[in-house]
Length: 168
Image (cartoon, rainbow, N blue to C red; front, side):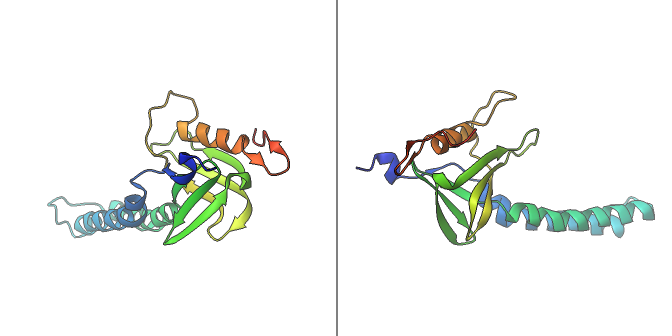
């Protein structure tokens, strides 16, 4: 018999994921581009040396390319007792927790990310990267979402084998 948590997935990715993935890169590129053009044409009343102008335009170009590459890989993620539900660009994939190979989290970044590495390739790849929903966390400890995912993945029953401690 299914429990209530089996039936209702809990969202573990941040509500900001859609904004960071779809809106922020365009806002940043447009806003910084406006400033870069303003500096180039001296709209702000301050003369700027040519070297600084070139540096600002180069910085704008590089970040405008890298930012969408970074944010495009962000996913929206829900979890049940037995599976992850991952959404990416209109595609929703259900991934059994038994398919999880490793769970990693970024350390020392302002925006924390969690990466789930899978045993096999899926329609959205073999890696899932997401920003977890904000929760208070003691310094130098695992994020509560990471702890929960590791616990769920490590203790899931494998058919014919019972409970398994699968992850380190």
